[in-house]
Image 1 (cartoon, rainbow, N blue to C red):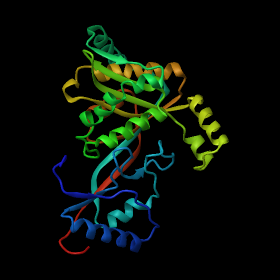
Image 2 (image 1 turned 90 degrees about the vertical axis):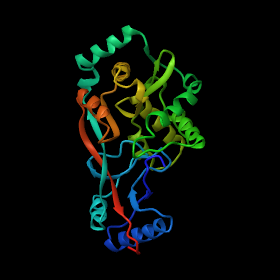
Image 3 (image 1 turned 135 degrees about the vertical axis):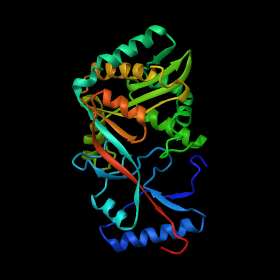
Image 4 (image 1 turned 45 degrees about the horizontal axis):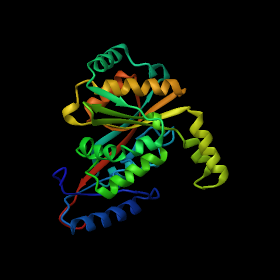
Length: 299
């Protein structure tokens, strides 16, 4: 197994504020997991590598940043803790001030030195067809850069195909930055338009007016989400991250975005957290993944 553990993961948790309901749900989950040799329940854990994880415990005053991100009532964490669940890890989101769309001088200096060396290069795209031509290479970077994170796992070929098509359906080519080293794709940094206002107004319906709202929201460029970054381990700490940030912040600034938010960074991802702090990011959201051992008898 990828992480050398034997847990059962749960996801899509949804229940009324009732201790009895939570107890019944997790008793059934524990019974199911026990018969399959699992030693713990962990979650909420992403489903298929393309959704968010955890229970929201901080940041209720603002909506979920993307449709795949969990957003729940405040009582969820309390009910889980009453059942003996403990923190496994947190995933944090942060706001970045428009003032920091210009990189700190130290980061920009590193990026410029990397440019001059010429070994790292950031690919830029103008059309979705340009991304499609490199989509297979981009998709396989997921397993090479993110599968070792505890909330992730190596995706199958079918799942990678889904991720690739998902990216192509919503991506603005200008906000997709791909890192090359001596001509080899070794990293990526993705950003996406905030379509939440239009999605909320559409209330889950697909209508001609709803499509028009999405198109208008796509062009308003108020807020951008940074969701997805990875660099192959052997190319980390060589300045490629600074180059990615430099190119993306230039694009974001030139397109007129006025707000930015990062999405679900594992609290143990030291390099990434250090990077966003240099960008002036302030943590505003926190999702928690819980764990509980499974006893030998029915819980």
